[in-house]
Amino acid sequence: MPNEKDSPIFIATWDFGELAVRTAWAHWQEHGDFAAACIEATAAVELDPSIPTVGIGGLPNRDGIVELDAAIMRGSDLRCGSIAAIRTTCPAIRVAKAVMDNTKSVMLAGQGADDFAMQQGFERIDREAMLTDKTRSEYECWRAKVEAGQADREKMVGHDTVCMLGWHQGETVACVATSGLGFKRAGRVGDSPIIGAGLYADDQSGCAASTGIGEELYRHAVSVRISDAMHAGASAAEATDAVLRRMIERDQANITRGLSILAIDRHGGVGAATTRTANHKFELHVCRAGVFERIVPTPITS
Ligand code: ASP
Image (tube, rainbow, N blue to C red):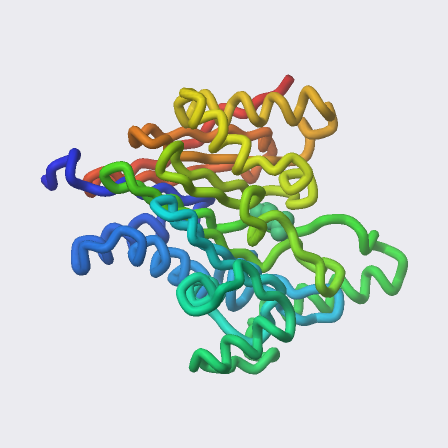
């Protein structure tokens, strides 16, 4: 068994979080680079076409086009890179890493992001190839219902983000990737690629990320709030609980919105809080020293 003190901690969201933490651990064992392990873990989820809310095979927007968001932040120097509404490159997390490493910018969006990916030598994926038979038929079914007046096109459907947090001897990294809300308005960008909202990492406090209806998480800049709470001395568990309760205090409707937040504090403590009570419960996958655990946090209900 690897020594727990020397081993990184990886945590990742939702059922596909298991793929993420197992990929991260395998990558770490082979290469010993915990930040690269987080990126490759996020990429593995993006490249799995059976996952309908992240990367290839993610649900498209209202026009039937898949638009991906992704971001990375490194806690040692606050360097970050972010990609929004990219249409022809996957995994978007690697493009976000290229923004961080190779530009003076933090975020690239839309056509500019796609062009940047080409300039960086990423493979171009045809828009059609970003869809699977399943997501194409779900889209066609949704559109037929909307046109027949049987479905509300503003109603949020099908969304989840892979949030991947890593900690190693006090160093932190946060990565996120998503296809956003299913059948979203073209160009709509949620919280995920927004530094401070969808993710934040600062070795002086820890790292944090969020998943759920992006507009609400964004409004409350949740990840930087969690980071600030941890900086002031709260553990990851205390900080995530306090930030979600504050969101609810500010707007009771947040209880019903299915919001989930997670963090690792600078001491390696793990925490998560959720309002998600429905059949699709929020789950977190944790890897500590090669030991894997699935956590289903008790939702906050009042
Ligand atoms: N936060 C993502 C977005 O709004 C979706 C999710 O995580 O469920 O795009």
